[in-house]
Amino acid sequence: MSAEPLLADAPWLTSGGTARVLQLLNADGEEARVVGGAVRNALLGLVPGDIDIATTALPHEVMRRAKSAGIKGVPTGIDHGTVTLVIDGQPYEVTTLREDTETFGRKAKVAFGRDWVKDAERRDFTMNGLSVDADGVVHDYVGGIADAVARRVRFIGDPDRRIAEDFLRILRFFRIHAAFGAGDPDCDGYLACIRGRAGLASLSAERLRMEMLKLLVARGASAAALAMAEAGLLQALTGGVGYTGPLSAMIAIERELGLAASSTRRLAALTVAVTEDAKRVATRLRLSNAETKALDSMGHRWWRLATKNEADARRLLYRLGAERYHDRVLLGWARAGGDVGSSRWRALAELPQRWTAPKFPLRAADFIARGMAEGPALGHVLTLAEDAWLAADFPLEQAALASIADQAAARISRDERT
Image (cartoon, rainbow, N blue to C red):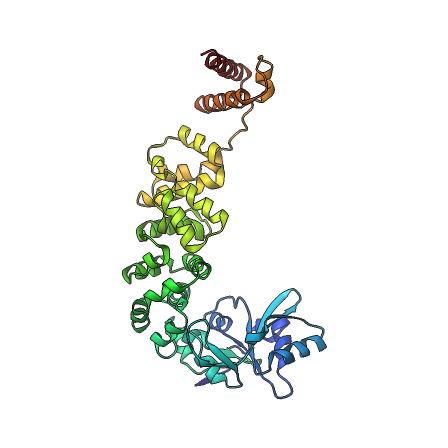
């Protein structure tokens, strides 16, 4: 066990809402501490993120004290010991100390307790089993400080048992390692994930999606995906082949272009070669409609970009819009090998920055003036004219537009006569 004042001067702990919640709950024989990821992040010099607090006080007592102090309390999971206190719009999740009485996956039976050691021992990884009190003293019952400093992601206790309690911990093992780990994954944990991989089939699509999207934007996503592929986990997670090479290329391209990490782009690079892949992944992970449409668009004939010149690219940009065009180009670039020094691929990717597609200038009135009646033929002639306008490279001169309109109207008239 370790108890050192490692965070005594941390402003996020000693002032503001966190300090207020701790003060509220550290009275009349009760104790509260910040637990989990916020402590880990602070020790690693990172932004604490969400502040989770554990307490010996029972949930109804937490709610009573909050009400007396004029703090909004929300019973978000009160039957399981969790309430959320809201201070200045910031939520603080407060959970009563617990210990497992029976463990069988997500439906484990727990009892409220007052033992900080048992509460720590029921968590997943050692670096997540730390707690810090209001004085900045970090309490470590599981070797988490040493592992955090070494950036070593290690299960608490027996890895097989931890995984059997919740098979999502397989994915969390790789996600936490990708975000905070260094070097190869912990060997004991890695082998336990392989032994338990059949349990991934029991997990809901929503939970898998959440962890996968978080993993893909972590700093070590490429190495983690490769380790998962070698362990035979990617197919179980996505239902198909995992393309780790294109994922690595996509990450390199994003960094080269100064782009923020995109979980959707990276998921496409990892899983999508054709549009059928996009549909499969969307079903397996229950992606949102927006995510599904993005993957489907990226997977649609991306290989044609390899031979497109700039005129072709402008027409595609017009058809797709800037965002869809950009993502498809990046997927094509990643699947072409991801050479970040390629001036040709860079030019295609940066086209939306230097060229804005004009609006199609012809309207229905232009064809009605040429004697066409309203109806299906009018929509058809507009489509023909737009295609001709694109083929002519977006002319805006009146003479060119009149010629395009005349030819389209004449073609419709010929079609109607035949």
